[in-house]
Each structure stands twice: as structure tokens, then as C-alpha cells.
Length: 160
Image (cartoon, rainbow, N blue to C red; front, side, top):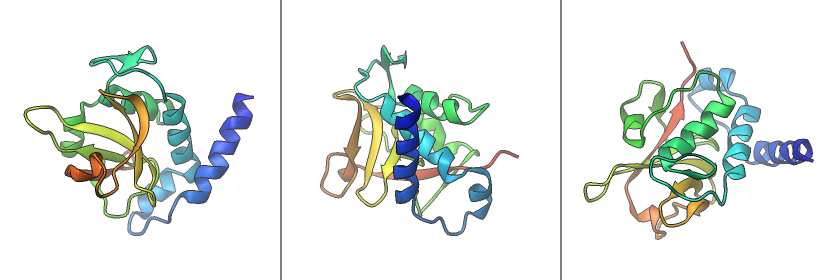
């Protein structure tokens, strides 16, 4: 049953992945299947409660959520706190986001940054572990709660 659901998720996600221009090296390493697996894994966490410092499906914070998802797909993926992604050489700022990229929201009022995973570029949706909702897909479209906050979208670069 799980395999059938995963195959369906791969087909659906592959159909909505827009083409990436100007990042051919990444496309050679990360296939649409890799990125579809990222989204499928992320969505399997929906409903997990938020817990600061939490690392598993009993409770998770935003940075551990992204780590858990990415490390399940990409071997050797290291843990980073949300703020670290903005200075991390493994990631690059992109103006052409695709499903599976990370979105980092600026810190507000002394709080640390917030991070999630892009699930739908056109509809401007991401999934993340929010303190008020737990792991949930939500909007970053203009006018939405997250759309009003400054953010950057980053792409994982190929190793080496």
C-alpha cells in the first residue's frame, strides 16, 4: 500500500515540477524523483506536533523536520539550524524555485529563523513545523501570514 502511495506521489509531484533554468549541475544530480521523494516524505510528517528541539514524529521543530526529510532522501545530509541555511555553502539563493527547495523566513523580534520545504511553487505553498499547528502545509502567498514575512528560497547544491 505504501509503495502505491509513493508511486502516486512521485507521478503527481513530477507533473508539477517546473523546469529549472540556470542550474544545470543540480538537475544532473537531483532528479525530479529525488525532489518528489522529498515532498512525499515531508507530507508523511503532517499532523506531527511541534516541539522545540524535537527530532522525531513524536514532536519536531522546523529545523529538525527539514533535516529528517532531507536526510531520508540525500545520504550524508547534515543537520543545520534554520538560521544556518542562509550562510551554508551547500545551499544557493534561487529566484527560480522548484518543489523540494527550502524556504527560510527571517527572524522576527529576537526569535530564530523559520524554515520549511516548498511543496507547490505556483500556489506558493510550503510544509513546515509551525509552533501553532505542528507539521502542516501552508501558504506563503502575498497577504497570507507567511507571505507577509521576508523570506528567501534556497536550493541544495550538488556535493563536491
